[in-house]
Every structure is written in structure tokens, then in C-alpha cells.
Length: 307
Image (cartoon, rainbow, N blue to C red; front, side, top):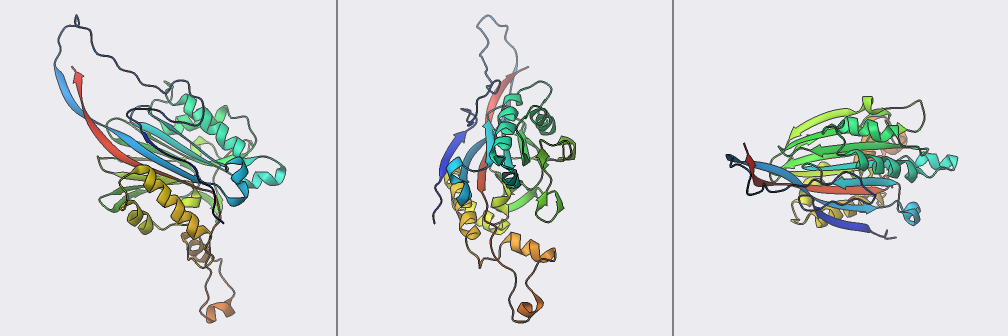
């Protein structure tokens, strides 16, 4: 059964800000010097920013509440984007798993321009987590792009990010797990991971680079080679994000598809009984989950800076 599509969008971060939650300090303004300002030398510099497309497909059983993934997009500096994947196990305790992830992202959006954060995604994660009061937990990834092209990433759990340059993946995050299918997560409970446990990464981006970011529902159901071939077909960021999410969703409903998730399960020792192996049968199948795909292309502009 087809799953309704939730708000595909395309945003040029050099022009506007988009986020599904209220914000406080995310706008960046600039002004021209007055005519009375003494003349100074000016240097032309190249600055980079994101163009972003997003696409969210909720789990079929969670469509009515819009799913449990949350994200925010900010135009601060070169651009900021974060994803939180609510841990569904909380539903067994009558806790809505989406509340924690949404509140966490709302607070992260508020703190983006905070002086203490200072372009550090790990500090942004710390401040947002500290004031989140909802019960629950979530895997989280935060990526902050500075105008000079440096992308800083903090990741707790199994949300992921890939950087594609000229048809090749040049950077990839790796999931943090206690054991198979049990990722690290930020939690409302005292016992659990914190920002200190985040894997920190940094990569220098150039114009034309493509960043694919999402929850585990994307990377568990689509191979890196499929990501590369899919994004190569689209020039519009929103169309590319939709295509990635749709492909992952189609794979997640195909019990015969040998997904990255099933392949990893076999590697970890989860497989069919030996008598099935003799018959040539192997563990295949999907991981039916919520899928959030975020597609970002890097653009650059030349600006004049006074010296």
C-alpha cells in the first residue's frame, strides 16, 4: 500500500530559512556601509552554502502522527541541518516516540546561533539535549557548514551522511551500536549516551559536492552504489531527495530484496537455518521503517569583504 508523502521541499539556504518549528536566532543579516564610511580595500572571497531538498515517508503504522523522525534546516552561516530519529521502543511504555525527537530538534534550532555553540555541532547537541524534557530517546546527527566550506558533523547512533564528489563517495559516517540493531542514542534517562559519545568528523567541501543525509531507514534499505546512481539522474534537490526516499521505501517493502540491513545481519551471525543454506536460501528482506532523505548540493558565491 502506498504511503502518503509528507512535504517534499526545496530550500536555497543562501536566501531563506526553513524549519517546521519556531526559531529565535537563526537569521543572519548584513548591511552595506554608509556613504560616509571611509573607503577600505576589498577582497573577493568564495563562500559556500547548501541547496537542500527533503523527503519524509513515515512508517505505515505511524502515518497518522507524521512519523517519529524530526529534522530542522537553518540558514545560519553556510547552513545547518540535523536529524533525530525517535526510538520506537518507547511506544511499549505508552510514550509517543516522536515527542522527544521533535523537542530536541526544536531546541537545537533555537541554539544554532548561540555564542557558546560557535559552529560546534557537538556543543549544539549538548545544549539542545540538556533542555529537552520529553520522555524518550533518539539517534541524532548534526551537520554545520561554515562559509569557508568546512562541514562539521556530530553523530550519535545510526543516522548517516555521505559526501559524493564527481560520482564517488569521499566521506561516510559509520553507525555507533551497542550491538546489532541497538544504536547509541540520546535519552531522557540518566543512563544513556550524551554529546560526549558523539563521533566527530570534519570534511572540506567544494562547489558541486553532494551530501546525502538521513535516518537509518534510508541507509538500511539502499546501497551506496544506488545512492550514487540515483542522485546522478536529478538536477533538482527536491526531486533527488524524493527519488532516494522512494527507492528506499520500495526496497523496504520487498521481502526478497537483499538489503544492506539483511546483508549486515548475516555478517553478524543472523541467518536462516543450515538446512535452508544447503538449498541455497539466504536471509533476505527489508527493514520496514520510517525513511527520511535529505539531499544537499554545495554552491559557492563570490563576495566582497572589506579589509
